[in-house]
Image 1 (spheres, rainbow, N blue to C red):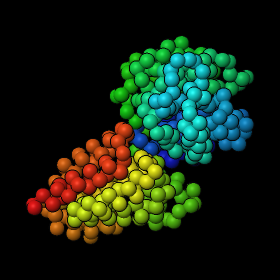
Image 2 (image 1 turned 90 degrees about the vertical axis):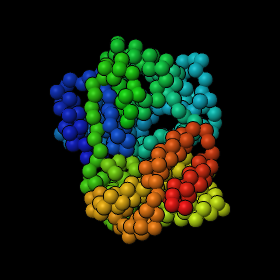
Image 3 (image 1 turned 30 degrees about the vertical axis):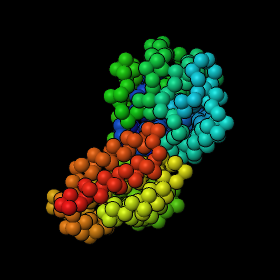
Image 4 (image 1 turned 45 degrees about the vertical axis):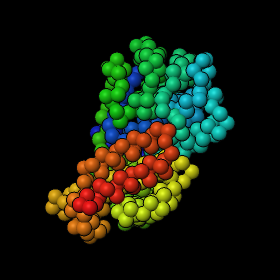
Length: 376
Ligand SMILES: [Zn+2]
């Protein structure tokens, strides 16, 4: 049902029109910022095209077609995603089966999480590319006939991770698409995809969500308190996934950690920095580190507004903590905020590479010591 998806009313209307007109293209490209529901909508659309009781509100969510799609483990919807580098590219079998035992278990766990929450982003350590074998496997599956009245949907998630040869292989399928199949490609970096690919897909743009749309969807989950939901929706800056992650990680705790980290940096207290950083990066959880950097980034973005005399609730994300921001600005008027934001972006880039995540944070803290207290 479309109400599983936060906001995106234009997209929902468009997809409904496409479906009920019977003019479904063989390939779609869903593009737009991270965390706004591109994969979730692709899964929802896969349900609709395979639903036994479709209506204007979308799929019925309960027939066998819908349930099969939702499981993410049926022939009706296959997800193609980046896999760890250990997978060899030498034959055409399902690359997932070639993962090591631990990697395979992690993959299944991630798939399970995504079937329960379509907004979940599948993240596997060392999975930086969509491999040629994953596309070969897709080709093998897509040319097998779908069961009567069904459509086989292939979701290529974060398609900007397609390697050149994988993209070339995919291009061949897009040129000669088999009947009763549908490829949905999602990406937040459309410019990273070759035009030969984007040109063969019908493009659908996903915009940032409004705060009230995020609130509405989060309230459906009824796990969190209203005031926390409101704060998370605002801090999420248009991304449902960000807001949800903030709630799961404990929103107030995350901000406290950021403040502790900042205080340790300002004091230049190396021991504290190491211990806080190790805590954040426990078990080498890169997603947590990214989450921390995201909140830290918001903090400095707010500080920049405060410095420029902007003090409205609309603009300041951490509005409830603005007194602390004002104090920080008064005490450190020479803090080089632009440079700090660049350093944060650099740190985020490093998290995706093979660098110990806690070391990235310690290094960042040491740089902040200088950049915040420029006068000394
Ligand atoms: Zn259904």
